[in-house]
Image 1 (cartoon, helix red, strand yellow):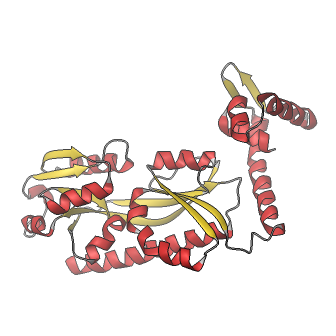
Image 2 (spheres, rainbow, N blue to C red; image 1 turned 60 degrees about the horizontal axis):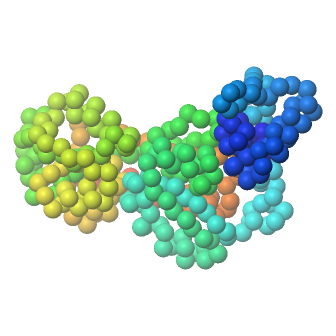
Image 3 (cartoon, rainbow, N blue to C red; image 1 turned 90 degrees about the vertical axis):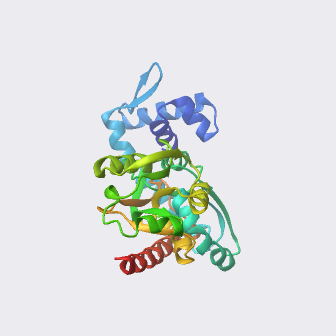
Length: 302
């Protein structure tokens, strides 16, 4: 069944063999034996790869649940379902990594000394690929994938803000609408980042006067650049909550507002460890704390 799921998800017996770290003929034999036992064809063999048959589609949905239960059974009988320990590979969007991680990581590692954490930051597309391939146990992404191989749960809805230095914010203090305000120099992410298309659509729809723009894909670099210069940027509130609380940067509410969801994804065929679950619980709690802090500041600005 694991071989079948690997072939289904990879779309190729060769790639499935690489993923399972076994020889290609072994995977081919397993699939042939499975089809013989079931009495149905699960895959069409194509020139380049494989394509699941209708029977294969049905068998895949059941296989995910069976493998997840088998994974849970192993955790239970080995005692790992009750012990917060072991390796946890985490994938985080830059916003979550920057805005939330510093606030929860120290306490988590202190409370669970037997946990070994590996945390990677990436774009949503990359994080989805890492989750599907097993490079990370779970990820927090800014785009909800439509993929039956993944469990997807929305953690929070965040709001995008116009962020600038405190001095630059004074230029917009008495402007009722950004469209009527002075021309802006805006630092924006490249097209590799999903937020870019959201920002572009907003600028166009609301006729924001952008005089110049520069593409920077490092969130840390963007915020430091904006803090020191007369440029602005648009970022999720979660990414800058720490700087907002320290009043190192200023923000302006966008009207109409732009909201962005953040989603937890993990392979449907796997059961998350207790260590992973505790980490996710802390992430979710910090998302909620961040949102409450941001809403408090927003209500004062209104």
